[in-house]
Image 1: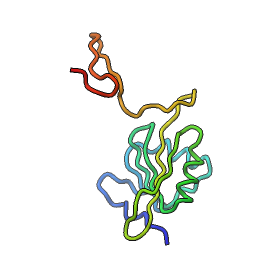
Image 2: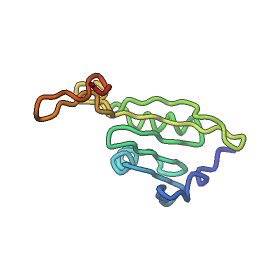
Image 3: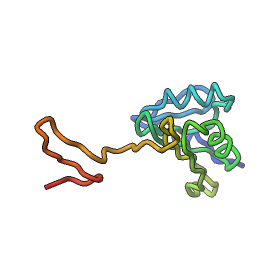
Image 4: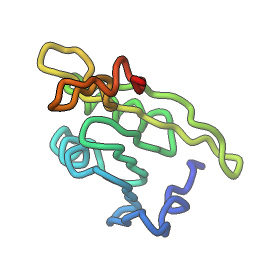
Length: 128
């Protein structure tokens, strides 16, 4: 028996949708892509960190692989066993949006220069 995804629902910041779909954060673009690409929107927990990256938690490896296939090639994906909960496996598909040239977009600020020319973040670290 696969893990019951409804256990992720009910949190303060989690939105519950029909068919045991639960979302947190920026998720509309991913839900739309999955739907258009024919991935059945049921039994999942979608965590959108921002418009470019996040994770889809699913009750089985095959569903995680299918989600990854639906997001490729627009997103770089990684399917992995997230862990076990209540004796059942929980799988995840991590995704990161690709640029038009195929490179992966960074989900984090790696370089930031202020209008006055002062660089405050370089290579993902604060400059002192």
